[in-house]
Length: 359
Ligand code: ADP
Ligand code: MG
Image (cartoon, rainbow, N blue to C red):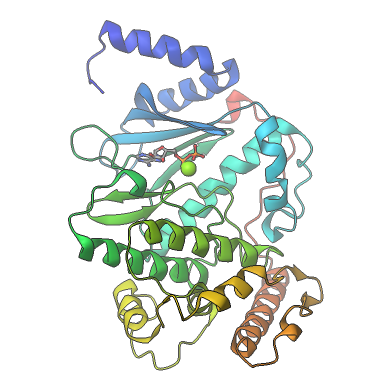
C-alpha cells in the first residue's frame, strides 16, 4: 500500500472501479470530497457479500490512525436472500418496509453493521474497529494494521507464541461473547476464527452485519452456533475445552454464582471461567453437549419451546431451562421498555432514494 500516486495505484484503481458499480463510485467520490477518504487503495479481502479495501484517511475522518478499512457490500442480491432470517424478527428493523427491495436491503445490512459496530465500540468492553461512516452500501471504519501497512491477521492466520497464549485467547473470546450479550446486547451470529482479528495483542471482533439482539427469535440458536464454532476451532489447536452447555449458561446468566469481580471486565470474567467452568473430557460433558446441540431453542412469541427439555428428567437441564426463562423475561421487559420510551434504534425508516446530494 504505497502512499504515492504511482502508475500501479492507477492500475489498482482501474481494477477497483471495474468491480464497483457507478453508484458506489459516486458514494466514494462524495466521501473523498467530504474529507473522509483521501486515497482509495487496493483490496484487502474479497468475500461473498462484500469486499474490503484499504484507504488513507482524509482530514475529516476523525480520530483514527490515518488509515481506513472500507467495506463495500456487493450490490448483487443473490447472496442476501438467505440472510433475511437475520432481519426477520429483529425488533430494530420490524418497521422497515425495504425488505423486498434488494438495493435497500443491502443498505440496511451496511447500516446494521455500522450500528452494531458502533454499539460494540462505544461499550468499551469488547475491542472492535472504530466505525466512521456509512453511506448506502459503503461502510468506513478504522483499519486494523500490523504496523507495516498490511492488515492485522485474522485469528485463523495468527501464529501463536505458545500454548499458553492459545488458552488465553480462548478464555478471552468466551468472556467477549458474554460481554457482547450482557453489555452490548448482541449475539454475533457468525463468530469464527475468520471474523476475529488479532491486533495489538488483542482480539478484535469484526463482521457484525448479521448480529442480532437477544430478543431475536433465533438468538439462542445463533449463540449456540457461535460457541460451537469457537470450541471447534480451539479443539483443533489441542487445548482443553469447556462444555458448550456450560459456556452457554455462562453467557446468558445475568448473575454468575460466586462471582465477585466487575461484570464489565473481561479479565475478571476469565478468572471466573477458569476457576468455575467444568472442562470437557472424553468421559465428561460430551453426551450433555450432544443433547445440548439438539435442543430446540427457538423462541416463539409465547416463549421457548420446551418440549425437548421435558425429555430429560434427570435435572441436568433444569438450570439451563430456568436461565433461558429468566433471559426471556428480561428481554420481554426491555422490549416493552424500548417500545414505551421509543428508544429503539431502528432504521430511520425513510424510504426515499438516497441521492448524492444527501451525503
Ligand atoms: P466478509 O463479510 O467478507 O467476511 P469481513 O468484515 O469479515 O467481511 O471482512 C473481510 C476481511 O477483511 C476480514 O477477514 C479481515 O481480514 C479484513 N478486514 C475487515 N475489516 C478490517 C479492518 N477494520 N481492519 C483490517 N482488516 C479488516
Ligand atoms: Mg467475515
